[in-house]
Image (cartoon, rainbow, N blue to C red; front, side, top):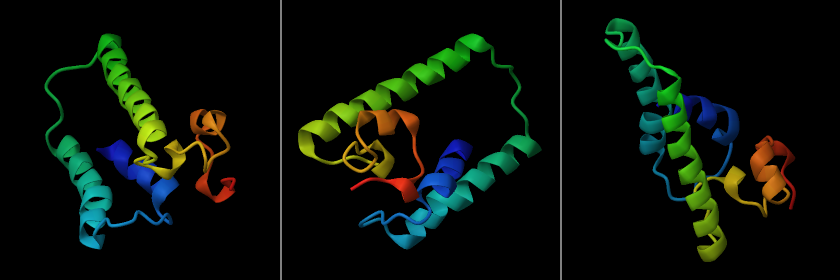
Length: 105
């Protein structure tokens, strides 16, 4: 959730997100990441994570990105502008995660 706040602040803050209601945007991308960090500081996790957990998390991330790119190519909708190859200079631009201010048309 904290990563959501960081990515939103870095890549999506000034991007038109379409029909996303403003209060939903504030709660999801600003309030909840702060709440999660505060929760983590007040009550730290009882177990430790090892490298195996990191790879499992990354696998889920890569599956999601792959699904979003394949589905986007088929239906013409990408959940984020930086996933859209037409806006970031092709699939190389998607992989490089360029800043949205430098997107190509």
